[in-house]
Length: 224
Image 1 (cartoon, rainbow, N blue to C red):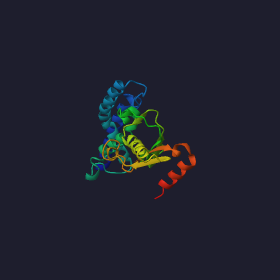
Image 2 (image 1 turned 135 degrees about the horizontal axis):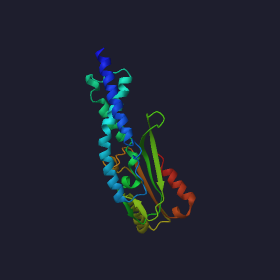
Image 3 (image 1 turned 90 degrees about the horizontal axis):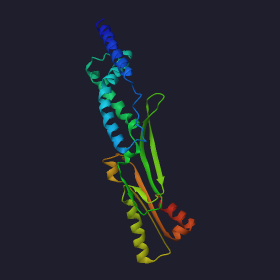
């Protein structure tokens, strides 16, 4: 049939493109060495973007081949651009293979005299199962105790300023401050994590010295 002839032609074209792709090292050079210099990594990131563009025909052909072997007519209107869209999607979903922690933080690390725990919680996480290439998702919670350096949020400083202000004004036995906030710079741009919250705390006086008092405050402050 005419459909079978088109399918055979497409299959041959797909196989030729895929074979050429593998002969040019395939995915062997996809991952960037995280130990390389920042300048070198930026150069490689730019190179990877060019390579992503050059790999699109092979990926598009591979998705065309998958659809053909599923019995689909890749010339019907609804599927005309599906292989290209799928190729771009898989490149986006796997872009973490050639990103480093420096790429993500983008030099947003600052000196700050804050030594209380910082927690960023409810970070939306999406990934692909390596066994079947289907999605899995969940939440990530990160906590760290700064050693004179913090990731670029002003909330740590604000937390300490509030605590010190109350302490100086009232001279109490202790002050405890916890701030839980959503940062629109993380929600609307950058990492774009819609539901993430950053939690910072400062303990002074009895709350710093007495674990029981600190625990009582934290328990009470977490109740909804």
